[in-house]
Length: 383
Picture 1: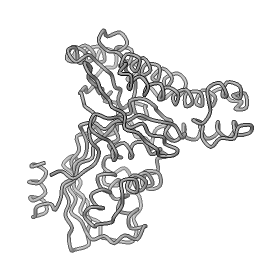
Picture 2 (picture 1 turned 30 degrees about the vertical axis):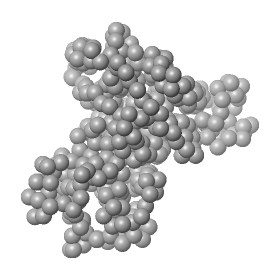
Picture 3 (picture 1 turned 60 degrees about the vertical axis):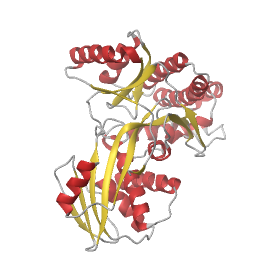
């Protein structure tokens, strides 16, 4: 944070008024069901996005980042449009959404720094969106609560950025608590903080180093496929979301879909929602081994039914299944590259890291990035 403040003064000629931090997240289990009304189980991680910010009087938004060389200046106006793939489109989208809600803003000096790998499925986009919205809410006294900030950020992602994501990412990085996972009902937004006690294990995050961009991937395609499957099932079922359907009911009614691929997508969604419920029970019973088994099952479903995995992620999970000391592993996030997570015995984490790196490099051709994390608090001001 001290380096960020020094850089801010060097670039803008003044100290920042405030500094904020928002973590990234991993989803422990419950993948691709947030936009299907399901329950998910994410937690925040130790890496994330810092924002140093001050108001200015010249009605100019000055966006700078320690991660990117391009600095952007935009005059305050009534609305903005998406600016290609530039990093600052995320905070700009938040500003645009606040302006559409007729909040009065002045110019700003904004300096960002993030240590989340971009495009790795750790919610770097939600992190930068939420930290921007939270900071502006504090700076301008907008009186938005955390849920308002989450909904505003989700709308930015859906409409300004153009990704049909659910609400999980934004919700997780806003509401997260230390040593807790959030059991979130993505339909009703009811949530419960679940103790995430790892005892003799560590949460290990493995970045495939194969970046993927949600808007350019098949994420939106899966979103559409689920909608088509739901529409077919609604011919005989009175439901609003796929996750309202029990597995037994689905097996009786899947003939309505009439398309093998759409049926596979729906089966993953419905079974994954059930896995989340079982996973929470195992956490509450402190049965991490049963929890880990569900992680492996989740990955298999994402690989064979939802088809959002890939050679890199599958290589990591394949290795993890055969490593004595790892009790569970799965891809996390949207897939198509990005990250996997694993639960590994603490005393064997270094060995796991070395052996996996060697195995992965031989099979894929380059090294992964591997680090451990605890479950952390969500967005807030850095004192």
